[in-house]
Image (tube, rainbow, N blue to C red; front, side, top):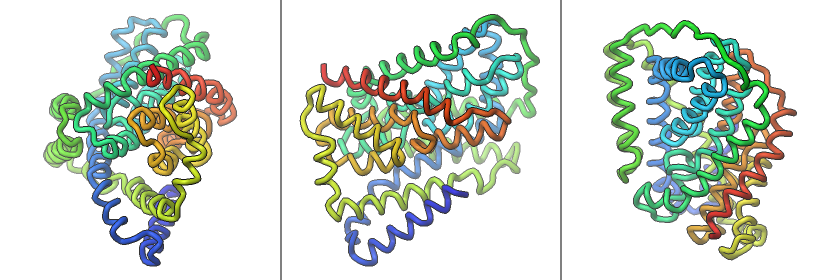
Length: 382
């Protein structure tokens, strides 16, 4: 509800900016032309992920990981880390935060393990692993559009090494902070019951076909919408009660639409000049650290999406844009509001009765965020 209220206020402010001429109508139309494919992708991939969760796909994968780990706690955690990276890379960070978090918490509890190492793995990797592909984060899709990249391969070439560093650093820090809880072994638990095997198999086939299509160079919204339509038809056949308006992330769409208009209004008023002083110029390591630090600070002060939108005009080269993405994707690990995924993650934890004090989250983030961002920028300068 809070997100919907904030989004509504932003949308009204954006409309006022257009009506008063602060944001020219032509600029507002340009913003709409830029963002509609991105928002359509977000809606479609959210529907796919939600229906996959209803079908039990994530639960079955979790049970499979438990079997493969053969009772070793560290092995199960490592497999969850891999799952979180894959989920974030292909299905976006919000999917990992919202849908994977309760699954891994249930997995840990079923095997009588501490849920905290698994919970922190999902939220940290939801952010840091979102550097892998354009579809991993809304900020990436915006950057790809601005850079004119035509294929995920070009994005991976630019940011792949940084994404690898960010993930490795994240995993090492997670292991160091939770190593005591990851010792020992666990007894196997009863696998989750599958309510409709036909529905599960059909959903799995759709997801398996979708994932490679997201990295073929086709505009991501096309295969995502196709998968959402196919899954919707399958669910209308097998489980019609699951197809409901609540599957559409209306709050996120309103929030993002209003935010784009408001940031566009600030740009029209000349905000880029002031931010250019903050972010500096150049492509050397110090300059790239400065851009990334601006993104990190902006994300934790406000939120990573407005931080990206405000700073993208000063990221005037591919390497500077990549450094900005490192800052706004891997940097939001300190404050609760730094990324929407973090807020959604904590909400899901509260819903399943897991308490993670924000004090602990912030203290760990104060170490993890600067270190991860600083090291992930280094490959961009080499």
